[in-house]
Image (cartoon, rainbow, N blue to C red; front, side, top):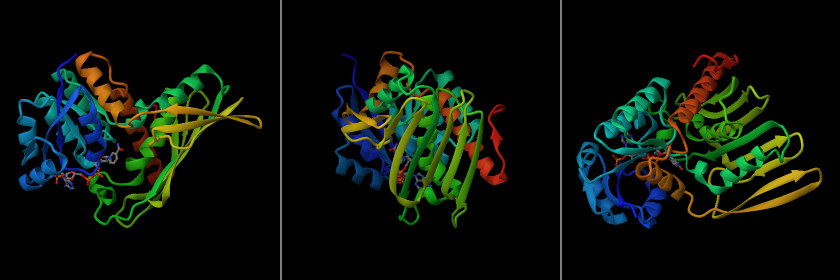
Length: 329
Ligand SMILES: NC(=O)c1ccc[n+]([C@@H]2O[C@H](COP(=O)([O-])OP(=O)(O)OC[C@H]3O[C@@H](n4cnc5c(N)ncnc54)[C@H](OP(=O)(O)O)[C@@H]3O)[C@@H](O)[C@H]2O)c1
């Protein structure tokens, strides 16, 4: 049995609450500390969530010699800066999606991970879920025939005023926040980056995209279409269409413990039940495997780079009104 890895939360972000249960329940991890820009907020957060240590600055958390792993759920524009600082302080890092906002940032993060020998991975929790693994297995088995089309969506009504997602300087916008999921899913199913993309956006008051409508064309002949947005009710879906059959995934990104896939062939539909467990435990286990067993993280930095490159190309397409090739990025 490996020693328990000590984790520290870099801020009091809302999304921490998804990680606190797996970090507390896992036999491989101990949630040791939380940091906030203010000591009083770190202390009250630590009391509320029964976290043993509170640090009044992010620097103090990185300087804590007992911390092995940093969970980075900062606003998107701070992912690169603080993940690099954490790596250079000798910590492993699980960084929230999107891992960064430019390719130069992803490259600097990759370089820091390489130089320090520490693990850095993007927290795409859905990638580790048995439902995603099953969908990929079905596609790879050839059961759907040759894949032609992948459709996806992730939208919700964003009503919180002052939310980081509405701030352009912080990397706000629906494609960075939720469009990244159907893009990542399509790239995972195809196992490649698109050759070419085209996108439209509906721009909100703050200059971010309130809604994004995108298309991707892959070398293998697969086409993908997705939408993301802050102005529609909560909706998530993936549909994978092959020449022989199609696979629908009603809850692709946040599956419940018991989820199901629908495999349709002609007028027959088969339900495939998935027993999923705790959604966010997968990324915690994957980090532990990477750190203690030297396994490659399931979401590689090259894969994360491909997702960022695709999002940037889609944004450029929406800006210019022209298709954008990814061949050169
Ligand atoms: N994987 C998922 O399921 C999932 C779900 C939701 C969000 N996310 C990702 O997690 C990240 C955080 O999202 P969230 O909704 O949890 O954000 P949030 O509640 O707004 O938290 C962000 C935290 O960052 C800290 N911070 C540092 N500088 C800041 C600044 N200039 N402005 C605002 N906050 C600042 C604050 O903590 P202190 O005040 O304590 O310093 C704040 O609590 C995003 O990257 C998002 O994409 C992932």
